[in-house]
Image (tube, rainbow, N blue to C red; front, side, top):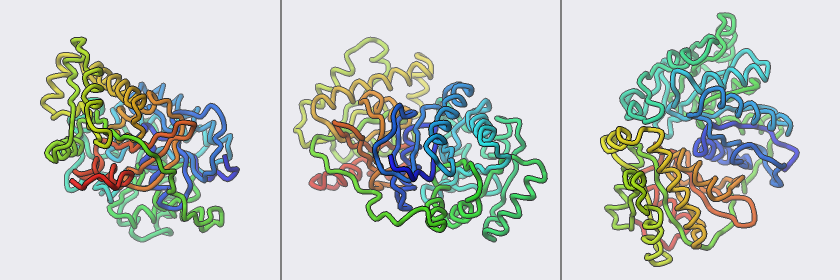
Length: 430
């Protein structure tokens, strides 16, 4: 690992980590993403390291413990600033985990102020007067209110975060942010005098994110979605710490078969699955009920994929509409139904890799975590962007695998084919 790691990042899920890493690479920072806390030093040049945890939906005390261990590793490797990354839809419950983790990191870094900004306008996430919008819709009317693990029923992030922590939550308003660096710093000081420890930061455009990033360059800790990271590479460049890197997104070429695995049941992923199927592409659906009944679902999926021509990518999915998800959860329980699907897709990924598949598009944070663990991936080099928030990556090690790890809510309807065409241009456009 290079001795010039500038930014140390902790992400609460795998796709979120990749989303953040993609943003940093776009800014010219060579970035390595690790799957979990590294056991050994990474023999890769990088100015940013993103540690991907699977802590979004675990009990809050476990999320705090994992995050503090990650922070310890990053501090030991000389990082100058730290970033806690969570979902742009602020996925959490009243018990956490955004508030407890943020508070614990602040305590460890001995800082009494930070900001929280999940906004990502390029992907339709904006924060206005403390309220989170998904496109033109309030968060609690966007479909996220039906999330099986973290239903978001309140769009007011000041209220949401205040329920998760004893630290005082405040608001850094859009009209202040629009006035730039000096106004933001003055507002920060005023909030601190009022006892505010964490300020929800409005952002309705990329320029707001750049302004926030520049005005908060001195903060030891930043928290947010990936959008807030837009301005961070520029801070390091202005400080003379980061040279321009034209090859930050360069990845090695891989030859082999491709597959798409989808466990997300988000609105966006449902649209992507539908687009793939209506385009006449081969697809195999995982039935959670059949899994629960002990049917050979994994074996049948592998047989379906094996019968296709080697150049034909397959979609294997458990993606379903909300009503079907509710029916399954009523029978199996939310946690068990999700765990069964994750285990099945992880097994399928491992068997596909044994059959020569070395390019995977994976939809869903929990699914992505299960797949990368099943494939034995410990670290990723971040490459070119497919859609906002989603890059291609290649695993480090003796048997490299290309992975596009997509948050359920991200990507255009044709995302799956778009991703594969970037690596296999011979695939016809759908």
